[in-house]
Image 1 (cartoon, one colour):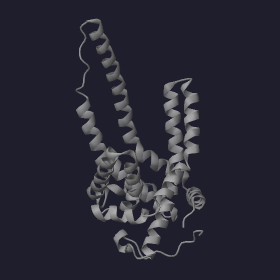
Image 2 (cartoon, helix red, strand yellow):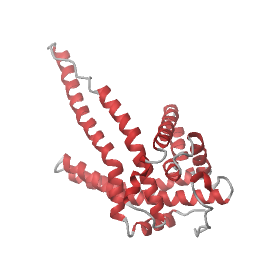
Image 3 (cartoon, one colour):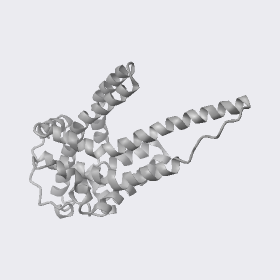
Image 4 (cartoon, one colour):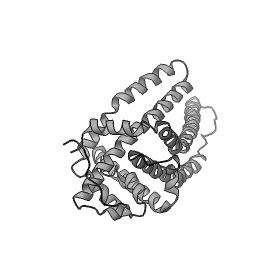
Length: 266
């Protein structure tokens, strides 16, 4: 049985000598998608303003051009392309960094490992999984959350072996999270205090400048993310090694040798 406090303690120990490297990994893994998001949000705000003025002109009976919607399709295609060909590989590489960092055997360049062996295989596996989760979320919120928890180990699994296969990767994630989804959900909630603090700081900064507020939120999330990712890496290693020791998965599937016993509290 794993204990949240021990996972977090181990995560802090793992980051004690590599925290700033981990910050660089997180920044690398998120900067492209964040830039796309900022550009989209900026253009969307313009679109909302144009729509508001267009509606007002109709009510007043005055001529006004319709809002420009020609940007939506290009932005959508760009977002999809960035997600598949950049964000997913970087997510796999970042997961590899944090898993290896747990054993003190990592380097910054691991964040780019998702672009090497199994590049498209890993990316398409994450894409299919996200589509699958999205379809469940269309039914109700709860099934979507359950599936998100069930497949929360996917990036870590693919970081060990991006060629493990689409369906087998999800099967392994289901094995690892079987009976653990509630505890994983609570683990995520245990970081809520940090997010509330970030929200409070961002709100204070918003009193001075919206840009300052966004910068504070981004910086806070950037510095907090290594701790959270390292904690989930600890969880993955525990669940993975337990499944191997129970014979539920073979270490060769994840390009591993047989895992040694783990010294976790019962």
